[in-house]
Image (tube, one colour):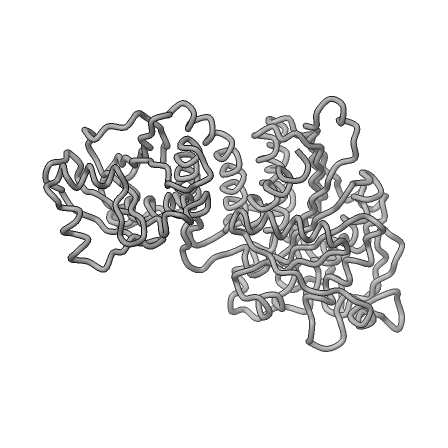
Amino acid sequence: MKITFSDPSYARTGALAVGVFDGPALTAAGKALDKKTGGALGRAIAASRFKGGKAQVLILLAPEGLKASRLLLFGLGKADEADDLVLQEAGGGIVANLATAGDKVANVLVERPPKCKLNLADCAANLAYGARLRSYRFDKYRTKEKEEDKPTLGTLNFMVKEPAAARRAFARLDSIAEGVCFTRDLVSEPANVLYPETLAREARRLGRYGVRVEVLDVNRMKQLGMGALLGVAQGSSHKPRVVTMQWNGAAKGARNKRPIAFIGKGVTFDTGGISIKPSGGMEDMKYDMAGAATVIGLMRSLARRKAKVNAVGIVGLVENMPSSTAQRPGDVVKSMSGQTIEVINTDAEGRLVLADVLCYCQKRFKPRLMIDLATLTGAIIVALGHEHAGLFSNDDKLAEQIGAAGKKVGETVWRLPLGEAYDEQINSPIADMKNVGSGRGGGSITAAQFLKRFVDDTPWAHLDIAGVAWAKKDAACVPKGGTGFGVRLLDRFVADNFE
């Protein structure tokens, strides 16, 4: 779908969309349209349950007095509460209702809510941003589809008094949307297409945007002593990879400054290994690499918008399979840090991958901070459902910064504790530690506590995104499927604290 910006004009064909505030209260453009249609808007609102609330829509077909095929009224909620998130959700709602309605073109009349802190151009840009995020579809493997399910909307035009300024404001947001959609693509790919070697190849494509990409193969990982990661990978015919992505965009005086680091778990398919998972729902394990996909998408966004920061992204890519060469419960592996791990459950593999990547990141890049993302535990879904990612950190300031960024973009996190009592649960009688805690309680916490043993004094945060990486139903700006969770959050985190 193409997004454009133009001067306001009511003499347009196709669908026309206009905002309405809670009450309902027509905007200035809405009042003008009501007059032009002989009061059709007011009569339609009076005859419906439409109140202008957030996410509400009302559609009038072939409104008299307009060339538009249909008129869509979209709710903006209370006029004094309209902000960037409200506008993004409204933009997503417009696409959700018009994408398959039959029109090839739709026009949106943009107005600035009276108490909104954004200027008019930014209002238009945020409406368009929400529309871009909601218009995402992963349909490359479909060969048959009902005609009524196929999108017809080819162009969504935002009519605003400052179209050039709106285009400039949208360009930055569109760079972030590109990263989100790229992440969604990676998460959605089946595991027979996307495995460690091919995912590394996708990461290499960032080189065209100025990102320096390096790929470590098995021999190099053996030289570095990455026994924990290699242990996970040894049951698969697909060889593991570790990919580093460096973006050096800081201002001239700070180009040698230590980077901030983002680390992703990239298990391209997780059977559970010898501790094999139940067959029901195992197909979902193609997205056990969502943490890595988020890091790759984030690095793309930072480069595309030329973020003024030095950042490094590192992803550990493996496939966890059962075979005659797979590691067994009871095996002991030696990590890059030199610490030994008794593998109690081969389905607790993501933490083994991250252990070596966290160590590698600190030794090579000496980052100012590290944030890892992983679909690490089912326990986090039990605790938080699908509404928040779990946040664990050894640094209060870092945790607060991540939480604030999440609220601003609508990707929320909830901080959970770390502590000595949890740490004791992963002590092993024959090695330095075991890869799961004692008992079922606090599974997400003991997993984070395991990761913490591979973090030195570096400020660090762990985001368990198992409950938010995949959506089973549509949301305002997120169609069901891969969500791309974390790209917007961490881009905002960078913008607010390091640029």
